[in-house]
Amino acid sequence: MAKPGITARIPWEDRWNAPTVEALLKDHKESHAKAFNSFLEGASKFEGVALSIAWHGEAWKWAIEFNLPHAGLGGKEADQMSMAYIVPRPETPEVAIPLAPSFLEVLPMRRINRFVREPIRSARQAVDVHWGLFTPSAQTEVDHLLDLFKRKHKWIALTHPLPSQA
Image (cartoon, rainbow, N blue to C red; front, side, top):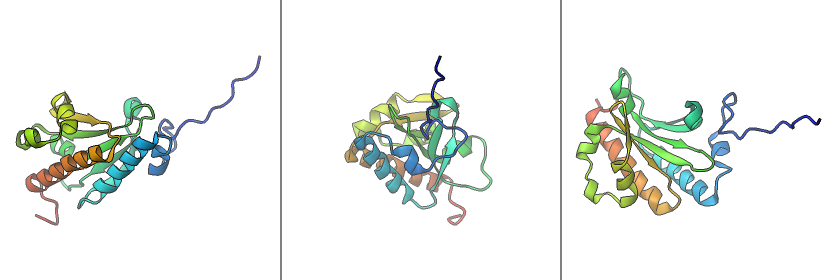
């Protein structure tokens, strides 16, 4: 009986070897790859936003995180400092944006594009955080997501000023 061959794991699934951003996004459909690269580029331009790659267990595996580092914050407030995550799942890559209820109260839902509004309305809630999940495949969808990202960034800056702004 022949021995089964060793198959290489895709970077997203290989828990023991931290991948690069490029490795995580290289095996996606062209439309998704362009959209996620555009989101990466746009989100990285906001003041104070730090990009990192972290293992998030079996569900998300390796994910790209966008955070606003704040000294001295913890608990629920630390969740609010997480701006977004790119989950580069090969079948259905997505952008996950944690949304605090206090942010949702000030969000002008009627003026937000349907691509963003509908996932927010149907977002799952876990520990007082609503998780908006989006799968952009066109530049216009990325633009709408970056608008939500911008609104969240501005809201965090107003409610929890960065150390340089305090």
